[in-house]
Length: 349
Figure 1 (tube, rainbow, N blue to C red):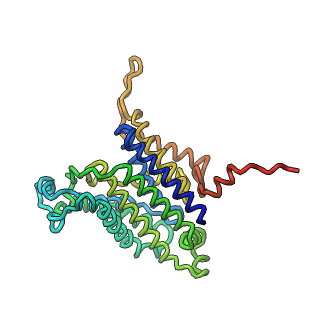
Figure 2 (tube, helix red, strand yellow):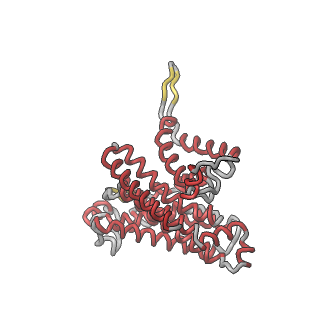
Figure 3 (cartoon, helix red, strand yellow):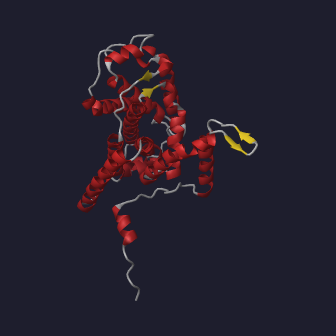
């Protein structure tokens, strides 16, 4: 990015902050909740696309990384007195039983949650990223299932199936919107750097990339850990938005949601992930009607839970038939593209 692009991005960020202020002060709680969810999806989806789209590695474990970040933030931010009430069956283990971060250290808890998730990504990526094909998908899916089992059974830390209730609701549009903007800005610049070009080279032809002096294992491991870091932050924001965390919150359905977002938007397109994250968040609420019972004349149609995902799956099938590369393909919205779009055509002689 040149000086002009950085200046325009700074102006856009100011406009974005003003929009967040308007939304936070004038929208109702329901709309604010949807926007918060959309921004969290943006963070998680853009990070997920770094692995699946930019580097071309098939991972199925972002729900596990989000769970690690979510539980870390919950354990650090829940007040000590409330911990004693929540962990009434089995006491919480030390040092979490005596530690509570004040509200001004919420960002620190998010960073720590991201680091724990990045550590989990490194742990699973180190032995598997040397392999090719679907092994990473199987290993990452297994890792997410291990996290789910541990969350259910490591009761002294996670409180088991009861989960952790009553978390302070620190998440608001300033946190979700600001971190979403920062995530997009950082990953977009990484993708346009030599690191991003190396990942794209690995995606296209790993053998040729290695012949050019690129270390595929190191690059893929860095991308995997970075993706896990932002997924952990998204998980921390999510649990402090809904004020609870439990094993059922981060099942494979969360990964399926993110997979729909990045495939619909276009694998490798950060712009596509951002746009479809918002579309997905709003459609999730709009399509609640298909799960509700309806009465048409003398006919009564019972509500069918899970029909929203059936609709999303059908949309995914249709898109794969007509737009195999997603809505945006691998295209990105940039300042140069916008200028070219609005530039007047020179008159032909």
